[in-house]
Length: 278
Image 1 (tube, rainbow, N blue to C red):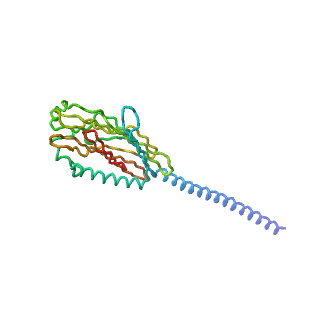
Image 2: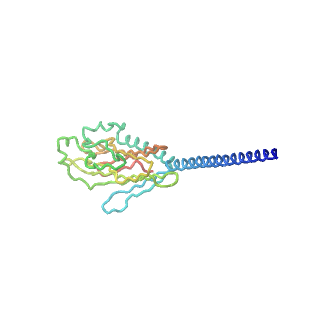
Image 3: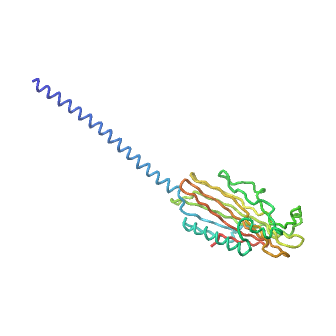
């Protein structure tokens, strides 16, 4: 009887031990499954973040500004990232050709060969976006291509100005999901046609303004405008002011840093050359 009792106790002890090991095994297994699920979830979230923060395409819309609010010379172009980078290369080449056409040798002070006739009385570089918001100091950020004789205040004698002209540009960025993540709109304005003592065609109130900015979480945008050249595209006897203006902006995430440039050349006769077109 004693032997049977000992066997029974040993069996019970072994059974309880097995049950305990099984319970612990189930707990460990559940923990392992939970951990594995967390890893998979984390990886999935990482993939979502990567697609969300990667730029997939860029769309550029342009339209002229006029009093009738009728769309003139409207255009919409959409690019993949590869196509947009190629477009940037084309813009750079057009700028080089334009500088050659008008006798400008470089970006920095190339127009100085005619600065004795036409000078920029105004701002040369200004921010369009600061701290994630459009800058509103429009009155302080204007350039002018005027005769040198205007230096002593004689610019008030300029007359026969034409109506202001301008163009609105909208850049829209979509991520790899096709969702719009950045929308940046700005306009460039200028007043041509001013003459001095009955001669010349000059430019005044050349200005680039950021109008609207919409930025999704995780994206950063900054932008600036720059007057690169002010030259005489006419003759000494009949000067025609010319001005090259660049707009540079940057869209940045933790995964992507895209810099873009648009370039424009305007003249005192009212003509406007968009170096960004096809």
